[in-house]
Amino acid sequence: MAGLEDLYREIILDHYRTPRNRGELDVPPATRVEGFNPLCGDEIVVYVRVDDGTVDDIRINGQGCSISQSSASMMSAAVKGKTVNEARAIVRAFKGLMSIHEQRLDGDGAVEVEPEPEVKLGDLEALQGVVKFPVRIKCATLGWNTFTQALDEAGASGA
Amino acid sequence: MKATLDAAVVRKDFAILDRERPGGGPRLVYLDSASSSQKPASVLDAMQDYYETTHANVHRGVYAIAEEATARFEGGRRKVARFLGGREDEIVFTKNVTEAVNLFVQSWGRANLKAGDAVLLTEMEHHSMLVPWLMLAPQLGVELRYLRVDDDGRLDLSDLDAKLDGARFVGITAASNVLGTLNPVRQIADAAHAAGAVVFVDGAQSAPHIATDVNALGCDAFGFTGHKMLGPTGIGGLWAKRELLEAMPPFLGGGEMIRDVRLDGFETNDVPWKFEAGTPPIAEAVGLGAAVDYLEAIGMDAVRAHELELTTYAMEQLRDRYGDDLIIHGPGDPAARAGVLSFAYKDVHPHDLAQVLDQHGVCVRAGHHCAKPLMRCLKVSATARASFYVYNDAADVDALIDALAEADKLFY
Picture 1: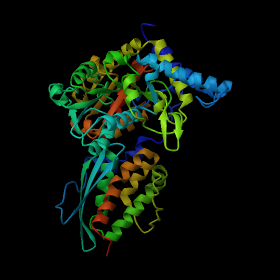
Picture 2: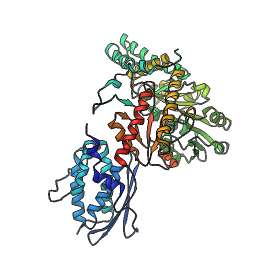
Picture 3: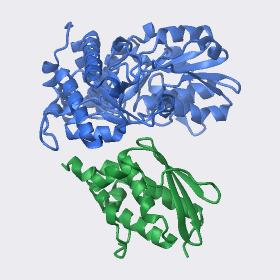
Picture 4: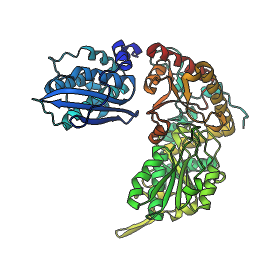
């Protein structure tokens, strides 16, 4: 049985206690998307402003557990200022970190995630302990799936 | 009937409570019976024995074991009827309460409601009562109304008569699965009847824990589920007054529920089989019958007294140890609630709290408990919930209280 220290790493608790990029953006020009975890009631709101193929700004709102909130906070720090293509690559790399379990549990036909060897996840790797707690993977990926949807809705295919 | 329940004796019948914990350490502390109860050996034995000695389809074969299977299946129905104080032909087996509500709403609702009629529910209802109506109401043009929940977690009855004006159906839970609140079913049912409404009581959280007499409750229909009352999953049921069941059109069509089928029509079977299309959960009915036997041997008054004692102890201990850092949702008086405690500890998210508790062998539920409208009333996204049953004891409560302190080490 995995220990709690695998799940609640210090960097995760730091982002939970002090979330980065917390708040809202004006819509438009930003795009706003809500994400729900129907199992637990967690709600995340992602605001993304894409300008000239770049994730110009991002804000996170909503409420949820330490894993969903810290994962979204770490994501916002990782993608802000990146090009849309770079941001999508980070998302794929992170989903790769979580994907084996997520696909098996979802059964919703999530696409195979290709490895992203060139992407350095850095602090985000602290979240890999989550895969030892399969129920919590959906918490960790909630913000990321919501962000992806926001990019799609913003029509940001990259440049 | 014994006057009191000895949890130490009861626990011996539940093998799972002795299982090795995934992380080793202290014993399994199962505090999630409101979600699903564990099963005593007698229930498992009855089902095993049924499959090993008797299994055949029911109401079909003329051979001996088919007759035996039918007798054991119908024996389960007879025991459930006795347990709830209803008649045998008024018990319709379903998968669970959810199916019982859907059956009633779809069958009775479509046959009896018209545009402009009102349906009265409450803010504390489980999704299983809310969603069937949210699905049907727009199709029929029916207005949905809700009794409010007050600050003590009780139903606000001050506007009951006004909300009953024009109501044809009232759906209330006997005991809230989140707050534990025991609702004044009889009072509401009497007022509803005076206003000309039928009353459906969700007994998912009451039937396993408190002696039930559907006639004394004054309701017209009552939903229950087996797996929360020591029985297997996959079986529950609807009790409803015979004249209602007879007047209601069938819900699911298929085998068993018919008397005759022609290529241009069919005639339905008698109640209750009219509502039991297809091969029913036979072994599950046998298991549910054994669960009812087990509960009756303890005595439902003893079950209630045991849970009230545990709930009182838990509320006292939680307050003594954690004071204002811990909020218990729902009635402050333990006697006003079933053995269900939803709580918030500081601002630790319920998911995180449940994760920490699990590390110490304590199983509690975290989430919205299929009652999202009630979560919004409470202004929370989720709660942690501990719930008690016949096999829990004071040591389980102590384990919960000690494990809560571990959350401090992580989050503060």
